[in-house]
Every structure is written in C-alpha cells, then in structure tokens.
Length: 112
Image (tube, rainbow, N blue to C red):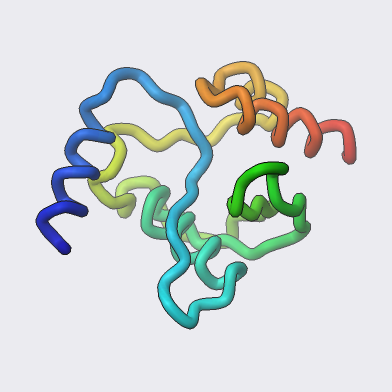
C-alpha cells in the first residue's frame, strides 16, 4: 500500500548516514534495464544510459549496471535520501556503507 511505502521511505531517509548506490524494485512487466534507469532517475534526478552489465550479486536478485549520466540534475531527486552526490568509482568503493556494494564497485574499477 502507499502508506506502507511512505513509512518505509521516511524510515530509510532517517536511519543515519548511509552511502549506497541507487537501486529499487522492478515494477510488474517492467524490463530490468528500464527499471534500473527509472530508479536511478527517481533517486538521483539524473538521466542515464546503461553502458555495461555487472550481473547479479550471488545469493540475491539484484542486477547491477554501469551507467553514464546524460542529463538531469541532483535537485530533481526524490525524497528517499537527504543528499545525492557524484564521486569517482574508487572513492565511492571505499565510502559505501554496504560491503556488497563496495565489492561491486571494486569489480567495476578492476574492469577499467
């Protein structure tokens, strides 16, 4: 329901300093790549294109992609997070608070 979703977002926003990559749920009938682009636009305010696939993290159903910004602005991000920032991959890999996401970015950095 919308109320449960709103509560979840408020709790997520207020749960302390968390640095993570944009991600979200695939809507029914939605292609995984379209969902990734949509979620990134909603959570960051940025328009992006997918430039590479990282696959699925073992033991999860989370698909990861490499993206390039093509437009948009951080000021247009949704209210799920207080702050949205852009940083180099190497810096983000050390600052992310989720160890799985740190591994994902380190994998990206190794492939460059």
